[in-house]
Length: 253
Ligand SMILES: Nc1ncnc2c1ncn2[C@@H]1O[C@H](COP(=O)(O)OP(=O)(O)OP(=O)(O)O)[C@@H](O)[C@H]1O
Ligand SMILES: [Mg+2]
Image 1 (cartoon, rainbow, N blue to C red):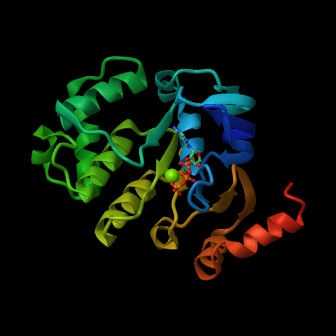
Image 2: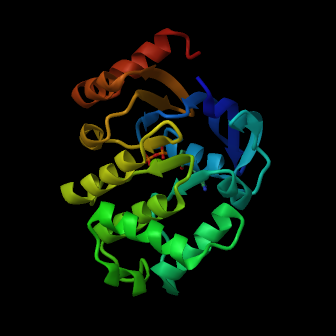
Image 3: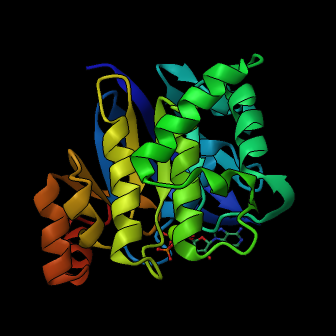
């Protein structure tokens, strides 16, 4: 199957401290994968490095998108190639309305001017999927938004931009069940042969709504286990200690 996103032996440091220590992960087109793991394992760092965050130094390894090495590309170049990263802590941008922000982001993503009709068609469809009222479009980006509204807005971005690969870093905490369902509805509506997603999450609960094809577990900067949706259930039931032991017995490699 075509590999949409492929991470090969990725080592990444920040301020001289090694955070990612040889991550291998492949996400084929058409699949949705979950990325789990304890606090500090490196999940968000991996998401940010995939998106091109320059605060981190890639020491070794590669990130491939559709077989092309994108390790050295700027974030906006990656976005044009179809990569989307939803942030764990969304930015507030006072003075920029949601509609204007989305229009600019879509122009960036497609690398061309977008006719108003095309833009509104995407917007209307997105709002409908999220059951969100049009009046929100005039509001400033994330300013005074509740946690659930921020989340809706982030998923609206996903639905308007229609990326090929989406990385969603879900903090779960503070999100009520309706907000989780919004995330799920957005991701599920994108599912299809031309879309793939990596959903970073701690909780099995989200995965009841977005059923992943594959679950990866990260620990101490590496993917230590990959399995089916049942792996998330096992982690929910047993925690991470058994896996730590399993990794230690395997000689840490
Ligand atoms: N910008 C940074 N500056 C300093 N340390 C960082 C930075 N980014 C990541 N780290 C460190 O790298 C490690 C991995 O952090 P990361 O945020 O990737 O973990 P995570 O798996 O997303 O954790 P969580 O489940 O809590 O979200 C942590 O020890 C963190 O302190
Ligand atoms: Mg994180």
